Structure formats: C-alpha cells, structure tokens
Length: 63
Length: 210
Image (cartoon, rainbow over all chains, first blue to last red; front, side):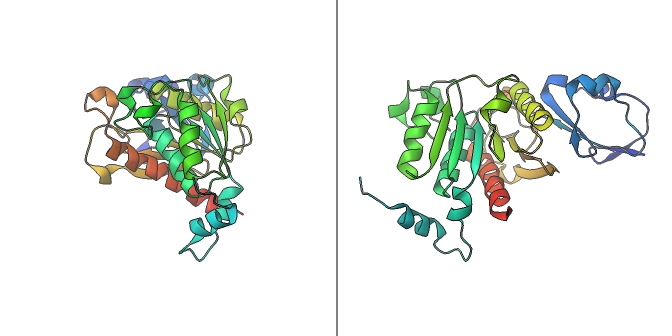
C-alpha cells in the first residue's frame, strides 16, 4: 500500500487527482515521491504506485 | 570602530566550543532567498556564527511596516533590503563576504543566482514563491540543500514551530499551518523562532559536513 504524508492510501489515481481531491493548490505545494522531488509537469502523468512513499508539503504565507 | 582581526573574531566565535565552528562556517556559501522577517534574521544569525559567504537576494525596499519583525532599524527605511542588510551584517561580522542580488527571484533566475551555495534558505513571504523556489532548486540543482520556512504568523505557540526533515535535501521549519492571510499578523518573536530554526539547521548541516 502507498503511504501519503504518513497515512496509508490505496487508490489508483494520479498525483494531480490526489491534490485536487484533497484541496491542495498546485502552485503552493512541493511533492516528494520516494525522497525525490516530482516536477510539476509530471503531476498529471504520475500514478501513485502501491509501494510509493509520498510527501506533500503545502506552503502557507508569511515571512 | 575598533579594529578587530579575523583571528580574534574566530577565537570569539569558537569560545566555549570544543570543536572549531568558525573554520567550518568560514568555508560555507549559504543562500538567503528573500530578506524579510525570516531572511534578515537568518542572515544575521549566520553572520554571528562566522558564515564566510552569504548570497542575498531580494528586490524590495525597507518600509516602516517591516520594523515589527525584520532585522532592519528605522534608519534603513527607504533603503533597498540588500544594501541595508549588507550594512547590518558588516557591523556584526566584517569578515562575512556578501554577494547581493537586487532582483525578483524567479523560476528562470534562481538556479543561477544560488549556484555555488551548498545550502539555500527559502525565506519568502508568499506561499507560491516558497513552492516555486523549492521545486525549481530541488529539480534543477542536483546537490543543493533547501531549508524552508512555512507557518510562522501570529504570536505565541512558539513550541508548535518545529524543523521537519522531508528528504536529505529538504527541511521545512514552522508550524506548517498558520498563514499570514488568516489575519493574526506577524510578530518579531514568532518570526524569529522560525528564523532561528532555519539558521540552526543550516549551522548543523555545515558543522556536520566534511
């Protein structure tokens, strides 16, 4: 089973679909798949695979 | 002003430490992207620890509304942040070399601006800019480490600000949720807790490196 931000996930969808479903704005996130950054242009063509470890960092404003 | 030799400054940085801090920090080149509340306080902390070279980038001018949390003082209002910060850093550590870019950092120029930096601190104000820099540098520069700040608005709840390791090349500091657009404002104390987390992680990375 895949793991997204520490929680198990068991659906065959793309990163883009996951972000939309969970209310993330694409231009405010960094997505790491198995420790590597996933370039934005690959969000729509990257399916979440059963053994993937995905970290989605959502940024908030202020600095 | 007193004339202080670099040897005296190094000895002062190293005082009470069993391991040399100054010598390692002196060899480091660290980028600071955005010179607001996070960036100005991060740069000051790194200069105090003996950072040898800081690459500073911001297009902005110091305003009165910045004084509540940024390292600048009233005499800097109206100055470019790059020039004002260089002045502050020279007063802290005259042996810290600075390279300043008075420019808006973008997807197109960020890789070139921070070339040669082993660590870059992401210290922007806008969430979109934070994401842009992190994504671009991690994708296009194969070795740089990013330490980013996210979630530092409001006041209090200092213990909610933490440093999280996302990967060997990506750390993020903050509470991860308190957005400035929530309307709780920004306070020097909470911004400095986050800036302290970022500067502390940078020092740790550099002092542990070979």
